Image (cartoon, rainbow over all chains, first blue to last red):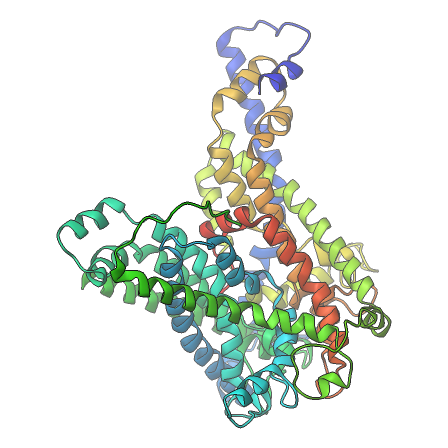
Length: 313
Length: 299
């Protein structure tokens, strides 16, 4: 560090000003530099985030479609949406997907994190193994699973035949298409949650755990009375990120099923994409994004209530 | 990877020995479930068309030739180069914009810096999918690009251009926030000392403060590279020509028609798309894990 300081030392002695004047000048320079440093980020976020958010809401009340002429339609888009079969299917499928994937993946990842927290050998290996699906692009994950689910010679049916089960049709069977996608979603999402839980578990107070042991608490009592309450804030964080993540599911569905068979696996973002870029109904698609925003907010609110109830128990 | 030191295990109470073994068994089965799909991908990449006609584990011989053929069937190498270009461009852009902003928020006496910080935190909660439609319209009407006039009319703006692929999704507020968190922990005395020595504000930022937050820079790089490399929806929306397509889009197009897909080639392409990120993760594991523990991104 001293080396860098020496290198930057000027050859001339600093000008002597009165201290007050000197510091005022310095502060002014700092403020100027501050705004200069901030301007690219402020400009970028205004153009590419703030304006689009406002525009999404405004567009949702119009019948805009790439052309020059458009009209206000008030809540017309919203009324049409709820009459729209595809949207209704997308809404139901997205909620189903979230309601299954979130609790299952949270429970599984917490269980694995507790296992990894037991001072085991080979932690690095296990952590890497569980995390690799998370760093892999969802499109790549989707192509791999497309091949696993291949009805003819895929791994899934090969695995079933080992145990003497009949082969499944997975993605092309209306009854199993959405669950097959859920399985991939759960599989891919574990890594992040495990790592967040693991970090939280390592922060649970050792003193409390030890004093509980001295009081003769069983493992289960320690978990229920010390560990679980300490995980509260982290649970909520994981829940919120999971909600936002599951509502945005798109890549998996786009590559694996395109929403089929029929509309069995159509999800919100896929429907938004199709309405906006294939049917060119931008106003209509914007109304859908607004509904999605509201849904995410509602889900997060419910999560908050759950957490509060848990704390008050 | 952790290097387990070989020491004589302290005699553990035999009561939980079986439990210990069970734990290892369960964790190992879990880890295998995580890795097997990737093994299946690699093994498939070496198989012949005959071998994939019915279920089998191992290929008869390692057909490296498949990788060459895959390149011939679809321009995977070009896709690869495009993805690399987008990842590097976006990372450079993000570093430049987010470190300066983060530094200003953390260290410079700006009026309302608390409010500005809240502004960035609020923005990092906005999911990209929500703004997808207007973002497309804005990018389409960037003035003076792609045949547009000064009002952003008449052309395609940044659609189908590197600008459009790199700039809008770069410089995420998350990274401004991350950079700020790290600059806050650097002591002010260093900057003060440098000011007394007559170093300018940019010099202080660039030569004194930023070298001290190398871990943060690496974290930002790793996350941004991963996000850019794995992006799919945005390039799907704004590119129409094969010359611009990144890897993920190329893969999706190649897998378009499950009935006719040449699986060994698709798996070879997928291996090409996944292995760089896996290698990067193994090398930068510590950063990744620390970063993830502080900010969860994927659902």
